[in-house]
Image (cartoon, rainbow, N blue to C red; front, side, top):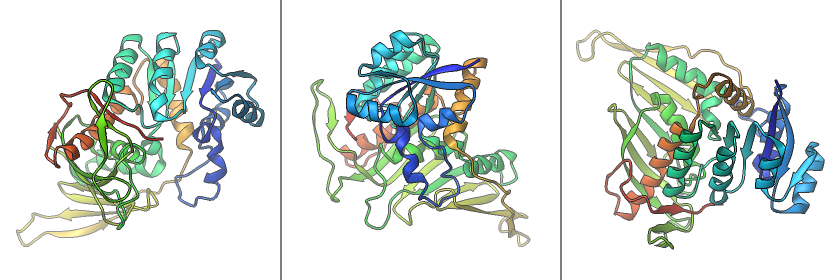
Length: 364
């Protein structure tokens, strides 16, 4: 079977980001990276249409990637093209509406870029709609599909280091400017949850700042809720999960990850560039215990975009949720919005799910 695909948003993640990836040297940044090129690499899919509000941009993009049908209104595309899968690569503030329309009009699979949405109320509506319609949603925080992180997760699941207890990630550099809550945080919260086995978040405590190092700027939105106009920067944060594990963001060297298990430590660096493991042998504090190095399994990078598309097809065909799905996206987004609430309350611990659902963060 050939799955008919439509792409909403003819920009960077839609396809042109591949021009940039050719200059990146990290082992898990593997082409194809953008959506349209990912579908071209999967024989079971065919991109038959695209939509963008900018007609000139739409035509240039479709000419480049050989997409025949063009629409300036995504609704027309979904109603006319009989699509099986829709990719949504618009900005986060314009992402929920096409997701909802596609789900309500029979599209079976949606590949949505991150962050999933711009507000908690949008998050609630997307989750409820996909549940009601049985729509499979793959989330664009793709690091859980990278070969390095996949291999790390298999090591943890094997039990050779014992059950995971916490994962620490260096979210920002010394200038505290590198990781924004929705833009970068959506990637890293997702992959760190993956390292821990995707538990349910129970609370979050965070320190954030604006792009200049000051307090985040917020106003009252039209619905009377908290509206943050610019995506804040993560300085530090701790997340607690219902199974007792923790996730910690620090402002040390960017790209470092350390998973602490009961009997070992797995460390990764350079955004999945390399890994090292140590295991505890013997009984701690008994005089016969030592730390020994353990070889990390060999791995080779592959396209995370292709892996997501193939996982989404499996979900459509089997009815089973994929590795990335709407429930996983919900957990990650709840954490990110919780960080904003914690900062606005002076950095206190905030229980999840949030009681106040009138919160929005507006990024690009």
